[in-house]
Length: 273
Ligand code: ARG
Image 1 (cartoon, rainbow, N blue to C red):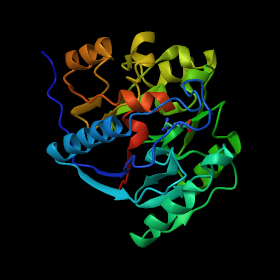
Image 2 (image 1 turned 90 degrees about the vertical axis):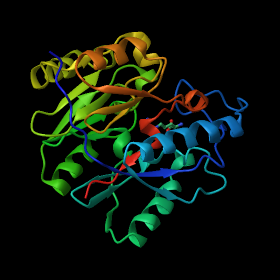
Image 3 (image 1 turned 120 degrees about the vertical axis):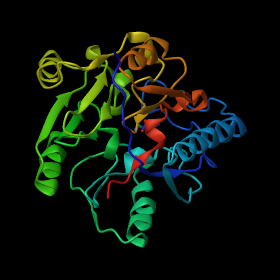
């Protein structure tokens, strides 16, 4: 019999794609000056926000700044655990100014923000499981930042090496299904070095494994509330597997954002009280 999953209401921080565009290439999905349909992007993004609200989640938003076409990818701005905010320091100079905008939002909302000393791209590479932080490195966030994250939160940080440039952030290759005591994850093994793959297999023997098609469709760039999984509709095999495990896939198509190498999770920062 399939287990019935219990979700939890979450608080998400997002940024409207008013100035979304592809102007530079900092990952293999981006082709500079690819035309972006901003109206379609807005529509797709609004659908995601409506889906979050319809499932009982709170959504806050940061005002988008002109000249920062990737600012819509709110996940990269910080990682927040127990109300403590570890900010970001972007790898690409083009994205560095985003941090000030997000930090300003956090401070106005009553949070202190720790500014990292080493390159660190927030929840793009730092994934809170409820027990520890899974931390990606290889393309963006550095090992030094992993150490800084561990010092800051006092939770174990498990470094994982990403090896495929298409999956340049940890959140393009892995997501947390439920962050309770029996935390579980879904991931695409081939995105990781052999050692990191072995670590994931030991820590999460029951993980849901994704196919290459799921991963290329940004199916691992999903958001789960413990029951509902907001997921790209093209990740069909993964959605079916999640269904068999008692999760409820909620398909939301953010295809326009794939032109920048982004998906659902990239657009969503979770604020954990
Ligand atoms: N164009 C952005 C970049 O390459 C996309 C960021 C996607 N965000 C994420 N959390 N994976 O930085």
